Length: 152
Image (cartoon, rainbow, N blue to C red):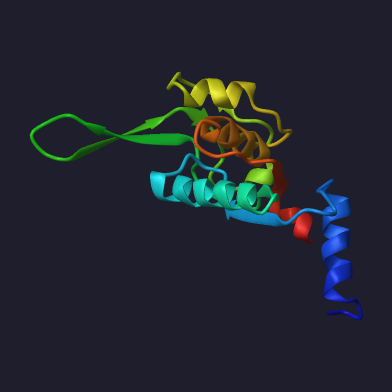
């Protein structure tokens, strides 16, 4: 591709992103937003597979995502299904998350608020990505967090 062997592209990606050169990579991607259990299942499967093949799990954060990741939706206990949407973080929903400074926490909603507050990352995308890794830790081990823009 573009005059370069696929193996060379792969090695360049590993080197550029400080990934191991000699281990299988199990890559899982998603937007940097607090997600539902179905997405968590994908990370659990990747984590288990990586351990079986002596590999590593890489979370490819879709950092160019545009959308409102600042709200949490919860079910309210009542006679019928009712969803409450609560704005917890200040995030601009019309600018790519990679182009925004860290999210400002507007309200407390644990454990999400603490995970975001303590997460590393210089922009909203990586802050959310690293917060997700911390929240998944009891269920799935993610070894590396890489922004999708690194593919470019």
